[in-house]
Structure formats: structure tokens, C-alpha cells
Image 1: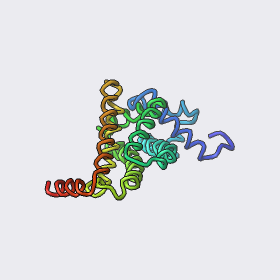
Image 2: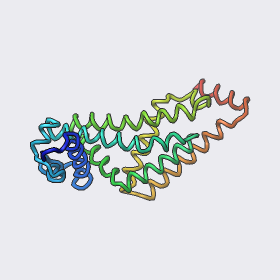
Image 3: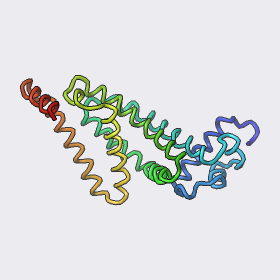
Length: 212
């Protein structure tokens, strides 16, 4: 470590280097040598600060996600309906793809299939998005029929999973991914219509749902 360089600065550079290595070389290209070279740091610092490369990848995964969640928190605060949440999701999707973060996510999920530690880290990172979406859903759906019948944590996971799946799908079939986003928009519109039904229709729908 260079003289006078703060420990936090070194750790941040290693985290940033890990994410960039994932982005450019994939999960199979992640190694202490590759990360250290990109961070312009001694390999020994990886083990000094994080204990192992796997631990560094896990910390980088959650740290990078926390940064992205924070960057979009103000945008989510402006959301006033489910359709607006889906629109914000589209913006997030475009921003994440442009930044190369969709590629990082794909690599993390691929690695998680065979590495329990990475799977735990990826799950914790995804949970950060789920909690953010859940807060928005609880706020915008408060007092609506959907809030009565939906499990909010489950709905937040469904919405998050839908966008994650679309992000990964887009790499293989961009047109189909666009169709899926359009379908989510129409679903949001349909749910808004449901909430605009009159008292009699709303009671009928509520009764029907409870019977099912």
C-alpha cells in the first residue's frame, strides 16, 4: 500500500476493481492477480482486507448494489402509482444496461449456481432492491384493493424478479424483452382500472377473490 493512502481508499479501489473485472472478464476471469492489477494494488492486500477473493467478490456485490439503490432512491420517492413504478423500473433497466451492470448481474447469478457463498452474496444484494421496491409498493398501494389481496413482500419479489429476468433475457432477444416490458405496463394500467371501479363492483371483485 502506498504511503499515506487511507485504508478505506484501498478497500474501495479493490471493490471497484472487482466489479470492473466481473464486467469485462466474467466470473471465470476473476482472480487475485486480475483484481490487483486493475486496482494497482498488491495482491496481498486482498487477503489482508477481505480474507479471500470469494469474500471480496461477495462484499463487492453488495456494495455495488447498495450504491445503485441509493442512486435511484430519490427517483423511487417520486413514484406515485404502480405504473409509475414500472416506468421507473424501465429507467433503471436502461441505466443499468448502459453502465454494464446487467452483465455483472448475469455473471454473479451464473457463479451463484455453483458457489454457495456467492449465491448468498447475490441473494443479499438482490434483497436490497426487493426491500426498496417493497417500500414503494406499500406506499403507492396503500388503501387499494390490491393492497388487501396481495402479499406485499411477495409482490415486491415478483416485480423485482420480473425486471431481473427481462434484463437477462434482453441479451438474447431484445424484442421479446421489450414485449415483456410492454406487458408489465398494460398490467399496471389494468390494476389502476380495478382500483377505479365503483363500490359495488369493488365489493364483487373482493368477494370473488376471497372465494377463490
